[in-house]
Image (tube, rainbow, N blue to C red; front, side, top):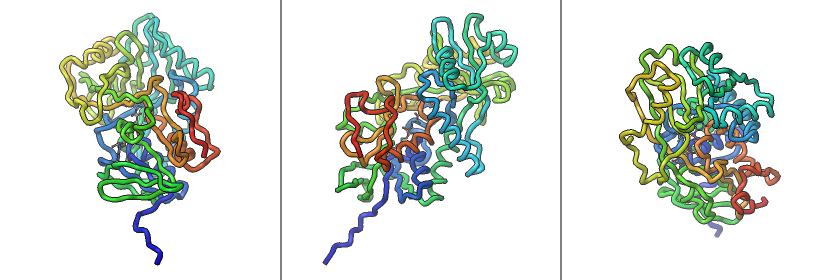
Length: 385
Ligand SMILES: Cc1cc2nc3c(=O)[nH]c(=O)nc-3n(C[C@H](O)[C@H](O)[C@H](O)COP(=O)(O)OP(=O)(O)OC[C@H]3O[C@@H](n4cnc5c(N)ncnc54)[C@H](O)[C@@H]3O)c2cc1C
């Protein structure tokens, strides 16, 4: 007598229902795949990489012009998501990329803008002050303005990707941590405390927890503790999105970026540079005295109306590769497994485009990883499907 399997079976399982996992889920739903997302916490939550309410989106990409096609695709998809859900996700307030003498961020952003024909303006410090009276930059600083830039609202973004995925038939389990996965014929078996599941394909998008699921690959991923602050402003009027773009400032204070006042008291500001190595279980989630000093010093230099107080703060996790480029590839041995990891503190803006790539890598044997993001750069061959 043949045995009837009681193991729930899917076309694809996604481990991690955070930024990239919900993006992959949305794409799986759009392609009509029978899919399951397993998230250890809730969707969204504040214990991983997507806490802190907002994320910068910019297109003149100082890190490398190679990222521009990916952010353009993501921007189209963010707009598609807004239209599908009738919910605001992207606030297009423009972006200012600033650099002190000897610091290259603004010039590198201009290189990407020129290479990809992105509208931009190279402004003098006087132009900047005239245009945004709340901002004063030193006379010898560089400034690039891009009107396409702005910020994304993380909770509406992740909730909307998850909701659209559900509407399209994807199953999403919250509060169900994955204990492990292994091969099962041409597919995979995934085990949680509650159940064993089977799927033809696996997508691993586990953020700061990635090394636990990919430990044997030895991908060089470092988890870093990052702090975010909301600084008090005497009068919020000159700091709202109508009057202030998102900004990134490269100087001796660090690579400090910030947002206009929106839906939360205070001006949000943080330092992209630095951060202590940690692990998601051991991380100190309290703010230590003096940790805000760099961002307060920079804010006082640029904005006259910043008060001394800190309205709010939080701790978030970066998962960083040695070259700060992402890992977006197939497993080097098992072609049915796609991996999205090491988003190095700048992945959110790309999420829906990363979701598409993860699904392509999992299902389409002709799809190739972008060389810049491939595991091969760490000396690992990619599996051929
Ligand atoms: C402070 C801060 C500021 C940032 N600013 C920007 C910015 O301005 N612009 C920008 O583009 N990017 C920014 N980023 C980066 C961006 O937020 C991240 O690159 C992105 O959120 C990473 O997504 P992820 O899916 O890898 O991680 P996450 O969103 O954390 O998702 C991983 C998920 O996997 C789940 N998981 C892990 N292990 C398991 C398991 N075993 N079982 C079940 N579930 C599991 C986790 O619970 C989590 O929900 C910032 C990041 C931080 C921390």
